[in-house]
Length: 385
Image (cartoon, rainbow, N blue to C red; front, side, top):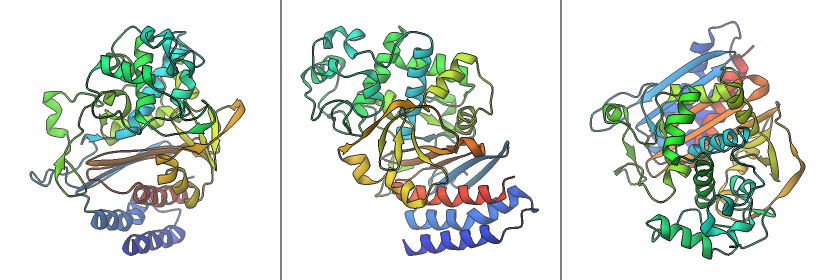
């Protein structure tokens, strides 16, 4: 990663020497461009879309192509898969159902899925499902599970690896079930709840689980780590866990809603705030309802550690916040996401009213995206009021 580190160092030097009186858009672009280009070159990334909100103003930066075949340029309207950042929409739906009195985070799954009543899975709470503390699941739903009856049989037979609320195991199955339960509480299918209830209320008209035929021309081609063209492979609970496609413009709106910069209906505003409540601590990281937060200012090491392989892929002992931690201002709230052919990152800092969206259309390491985002946020912060 020598070239990338060098580019980051050059960018950091440029940031330190930047004149605050200069035009922010131009200076941010000048400061981040070397790091973005080094990132794209090192990881063979065809296209990158970046969106920033700084001091109430939006900034968009687009690099490269959405498809190597067509050479169509990346724009702020190019659709990217965002992988596990999709979970933040699931969390928002859950919180919206909570505000509307349709569920409680202390509820158990069997209340909404009677076939699971009395099982070990029924002993966990919805809060456990939304904070990765239910008792341990594989990171993906097993491939052999192909339909709802098999899925219910899997969860009915599930046995915890540890008592709920004592350890954290990042996983798609538990969050997927939380989304399924939220939709059940609203008496509607999950895709309908997202695409016809939540997204319209958020004003996100270019965000989809299922990309419409007339929007496919905007859908970037993803590439895996062997440079083969790929797109997300639907499986059980894929919509709830990693199914969202969106563009930099729409996702930045979501960031600005989370920052309180965009007005939404009061119940949705409350739901958004509820997703920022902290429930468990793991090192420097606090686990919210899907979102992960770190005290701000945050070191690069703490940022990387919060999304490191051992945090994502292993069981880790957690300490509960007692009582739960009210939403904070001096924090960086973030979420990583990836599919086989895309990598994404979202972060925002409430006290600074600043946030970033980073979208890429090739498989790349999480830590590389975090380093790039860290450089960009520092550039934006140096030029903010």
